[in-house]
Image 1 (cartoon, rainbow, N blue to C red):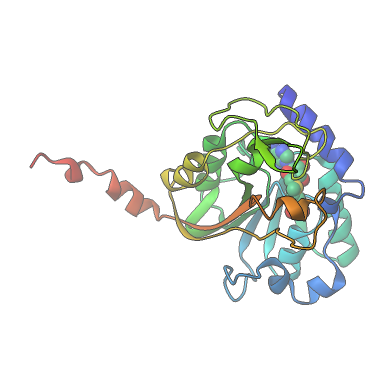
Image 2 (image 1 turned 30 degrees about the vertical axis):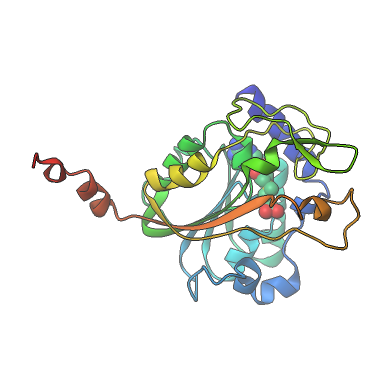
Length: 267
Ligand SMILES: C[S@@+](CC[C@H](N)C(=O)[O-])C[C@H]1O[C@@H](n2cnc3c(N)ncnc32)[C@H](O)[C@@H]1O
């Protein structure tokens, strides 16, 4: 395991103890699991019997809801602490969930074309190479499979601090590579975690190049006009922190056609 992974694993083991990301699904959410998971209507009417990969989504929320909706669920996460929440909650509710401790960019334990849905909450910021992550997701997704994901947007990760008028200062270069520096303004950053900036070209273009078509893209609104200046809702008025995408795996036969030599015959 590399240093950044070790550091993120221990950061997330700590966050598995009572943080906002470690809240298991409630009874009310479990009564209407698809409604809780999918306020935008991106999922099929039923996920019963579908193979779902909850990627980097330990913590007992997504996995429990998909399992409550009848899906066959595999959760992959780097943090044993987060995965323990999935196992404990699944046991308590009599649901079945398979948990795997692994990094999202290296999934040799998962077979090709296995999953109907891959669902990934905000987490690509914890790996340096997004191309590897998308390649793995493309490999394990079935033809026409759904990939639902949320990511931190580059501008939000570029903010370093505030000036005297509480204006947000972009202090990290857009083309920054390597771990992000520690910053004063820590809204939307997790203490102790090593994070990386991925540009739009990599987040959106990279997904298309990996073999997906994007069917929808949303920016969850975190702006709160009543928030105090030091609250993340205030910052959300100026910079949208997240982007959420609905993408579909291109059929492998279509993808092969697209690079077929016939298309490149000289005129
Ligand atoms: C924002 S949390 C998502 C979990 C949560 N269920 C949610 O949506 O509220 C991000 C997750 O990514 C995981 N993670 C960080 N680096 C990872 C990696 N390289 N591979 C897999 N999971 C990773 C963390 O352990 C953590 O559980």
